[in-house]
Image (cartoon, rainbow, N blue to C red; front, side):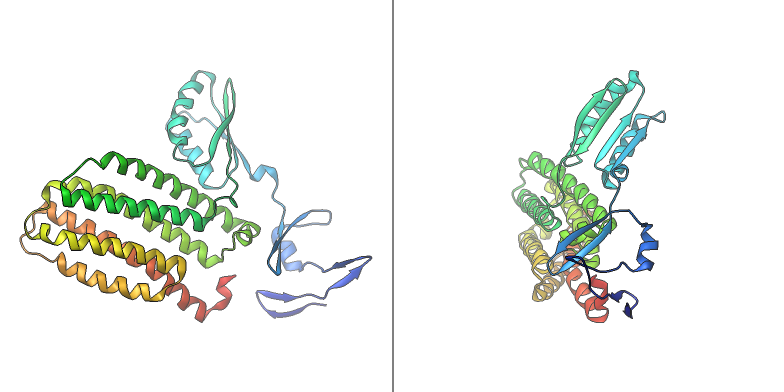
Length: 329
């Protein structure tokens, strides 16, 4: 007998069948996922809970990509398949273009973390995802993205203060690493959204999937802006130059507190960031700035506002959970 206590919650009686305990599956769920007698389901243990999901056929993990007259389009298809969570990608291409495609793939593959060529035919290339999503989790990806963006911001600001461009090559390498991490984060979050068992194994709620995607997006954009800062080394002059040291201190402090708020749930960090942002705005409100200095000011403010946005994800999450606890499922 089933007792329906809410639209999203169904109670079942536990019954004995031989030496096993069994429960029946709700018919509304069975119909929605297309299960029938004889099919298999996947069961994962998540603490005190069990997550039951329909088994996903191998074909949903593998995709064949056909050539449609343009190498650029084919490369875009490979990137899309990666982001959509496919683990095996078979690229089918005319023999005379295979070598050209392989050269193109070598460059784009460096941006797609974990994707490797495992087989090559006369008119095909087979790629496989080599990283288990449970081996490099979203929280670990985000911590690495934060460390890289923090290092980039620190070095860019030091370049501005010292009029030194020696760090630009290192910043370029870090930016490439950030791109790889962001692409991988998008991939794993999309897979988790489509696979409740994976989401449970990663211990992510529906809200956290969105929050991690936004936090990763902000960090990747902060890194882009940090890399762009070094282009303005020669225009840090006048009253603006006198304020850059304090501006740098605020941006680095806020970067630390933004992740402290997001990853450790420190609500007081949000208040510190807001106060620092107000001071930063005053420091950047200067008369007679040149066009290039105005662009630099916009970069500083853009970084600070995204740091504030990351911290505010915590506040938004708390408010939503208080009003609708069922959204955490």
